[in-house]
Each structure stands twice: as structure tokens, then as C-alpha cells.
Image (cartoon, rainbow, N blue to C red):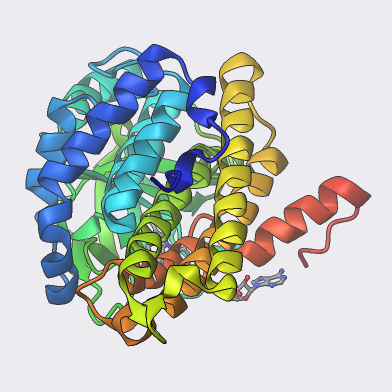
Length: 388
Ligand code: FAD
């Protein structure tokens, strides 16, 4: 039997029994609830986000690395493994879980009042309520400091005006974490999406993350009480810290998409014959497979190292940048290389490779583009900022 590409080096031995059990559970959930359907969702550009959220809530995946309020309190490594297994099914489905847990729930958990936590977190952990996280705007992506969305004090409350773009889960969300500029700097709000003046329009025509709901939010004089403001969030550091949380999940998740591509390519190469023999027997094919398996395993070791450090002492942002930059870059290279092994079938929706490759284009861009992560590392190495 050929060695399973994920475990050429017996890396499974580095996990605890509990971590392996969590990994296996999430793999089963993804196999049952996502894999059989996801190609159809992707083709139609839709996903049953509410049903999936409930399913993931039932098994404790939402905000699983947070504590209290119905959250599972799992380790960073267990959370990472869950992201990997979900993204092996589809990056859009992993995005749903990342945005819910690491962006929307984390923002409320870390920066919210006790009342806000009680109001939102148990329902979000259970999958009954869906959250989104609005930072990016049409004219401000990599440079969120330039945001144009405004929060103006109005008596005891606030008025929010502006717009957010490319917001995952927005069309189906019950609560939107919205970042806006106020007189005192950047502030955050947990806005019920039914508030008058709040609208979320679905972004259509995506060629990537098609099994994920993405929205454009308009804030037209949205009035909220001061109890909607996240009291502990002061300045841009708050949303950036949420992004660091979510990026950690991507360090792992991207490897899932790559693993699924490699499994597919190996299975295909061993059965597809050309010139009278399986294409797996050609040295050029084997060189590709060997290099991809190595990158996958190196990426996994990097993810595990970051996960163990996260659990022991926390991570610096540039450490998460290193993981996201490397693992997404390698995952997309693996997906593209696997595509070549399937020849024309590689572009068919009958196989998952093109879907993963297209999804990874979004993963390369969101949560900080690869260029931005290079600049983060460049600044950490030299002490000089090259951002502006
Ligand atoms: P830009 O910032 O305009 O960048 C364009 C190019 O210029 C990139 O290659 C970039 O690397 C490069 N560039 C920019 N500045 C520099 C520089 N200083 N030096 C060198 N190169 C530079 N956002 C949210 O807030 N919430 C979400 O839930 C969310 N979900 C998303 C889902 C999808 C499917 C996608 C595609 C995006 C999502 N985003 C979300 C937005 C995402 O975070 C932004 O797209 C990302 O930050 C990049 O911003 P931009 O698209 O405006 O690109």
C-alpha cells in the first residue's frame, strides 16, 4: 500500500489521543454533512449555512477554543486540526467556522461586556445564531486604518454610517461585529442585523469560495445603544487581534485543502494509464508527488509548532504571519500541481482539485494577503516598516 501522504513521517504520533479523537470526529462530520454535497453547492454558488452552523454547533466546533458561555475550551491544536478537516472538505465551510468562532465570537468574548457575552455567545456556540465580522470596506482592504465607516455619538447611543465589503456570513448573520472610526479612534459594535438601516446584500459572481455566503453591508444611519459598543475594544489593535486568531486556523486549514488534492492526485495517478502504464510510474509524476508530500508535512510541522506555542505561551503576530504565508502559499502550489496530474480531468468539477485551487485564491487574499504577511515578516526581521 502506498503511504498516506499526510503521514509519510508518522506525524500522527505527535498528537495526543484526545487530539486524534477530535480530528476523527470532525473528519466524520465533514464526510457526512459536507463532502457528499459540496460540489453541488459550489456549482450553484450556495450553501445551507444555517443548517451547517447548527450541525457544527451540535458537535461543539463553534468558538471551540474559547472558554465559558457554552464554548468547548479546546486547545489551539485541537482547533487547528478541526480547521484542517473542515477545509479538506471545502475552504468555504472552514471559513464559516473561522468567522463565527475566531472573528465574531472572539471579538465579543475578548472585547465585549458581560451582558453582550451572555446575549450572543451561548447561541453562537450552539449554532443557533450566526455572526459576521465587518472590517474590510470597498476602498480599504489591506489598510483598514483608512476605514471610512463612521460611528457618531447620538445622545446615549451611536449612529453608524458607511459600508463593509466581502463580509463572510453577512447575508445570513444575526449579529455583525462592525468596526468604525469614532472621535476617539476605531471602535467596535455588536450590531443585531435586524436594526433599521442595516442591510447585507449577497456578493454574487465569485469564482472562489462559492460554497460560502459573502456579503456587502450597508450602514445607513444605523442607531444602536451604547450597550452595542464593545467596551474593551480600543483602537485598530482590537480587530487586528481577532484576525491573528483567525489566521491561526488558516495555517492549519489550508493544509486540509492541499491534503485532499494530494489524495485525489495519488489515487488518480495510480489508476490512470498512459503509454501502457499507470502515470504514477513515471518519474516526473513521482517527483511531483514527493515534493508535494514533503511540503505538506513541513507545513503540518509548522502548524503543530505554532499550535503548541499558542497553547503554551501565545503567539506573536509575525509568527502567525509566517504560518499563514507559508502554508497557504504551499497549499495553492500543491493544488495547482495536483491539477496537472489529472490532466483535463483536473479542470472538471467531478474532482475536488479545481474547487480547492479556486478557494485557495481567496484564502491567499483574506486575513492579510501574502504580500502583507511578507511585510510583517520583513518588519520583524529589519525593524523597518515597508507598509506605506
Ligand atoms: P487590496 O488591499 O486593495 O490589495 C490589492 C493588492 O495590493 C494585493 O495584492 C495586496 O497584497 C497589495 N498591497 C496592498 N498594500 C500593499 C503594500 N503596502 N505593499 C505591497 N502590496 C500591497 N474581510 C472582512 O473584514 N471580513 C470578512 O469576513 C471577509 N471575508 C472575505 C471573504 C472573501 C471570499 C474574500 C475574497 C475576502 C474577504 N474579506 C473579508 C476581505 C479581505 O480581508 C480583503 O480582501 C483583504 O484584506 C485584501 O484587501 P483588498 O481585497 O481590498 O485588496
